[in-house]
Image 1: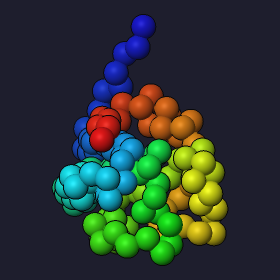
Image 2: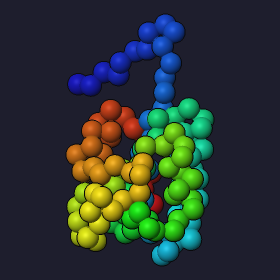
Image 3: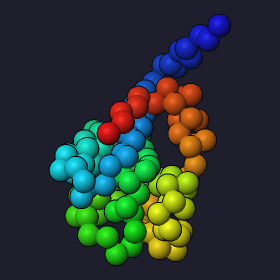
Image 4: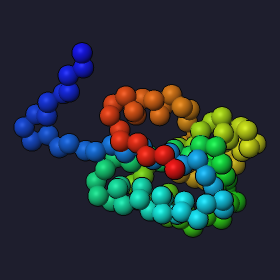
Length: 121
């Protein structure tokens, strides 16, 4: 049986958030709001990871115009792009915006296993 770890005196409890974005900003007008939520959670002190998957990887291309994602890349949010989704769309590692790291679904499972709160859009 799993027993939650108790915090020690003086230890800060940092909330972990995992936001999974599966739509491109060009197919859904509310993607920018989801990016803004990630940025706000990061500014509030949370440990935030945005995972781009499926069509959500499209604005990760170096030449893609997406001001909301570009603002997010300048914040405290860690941005990951699904390696399988990138390969399906012929986006190579050298063709991505700086600040976005290629990742696999395994890393997402790891985040969930340590209690990250997840939102999928």
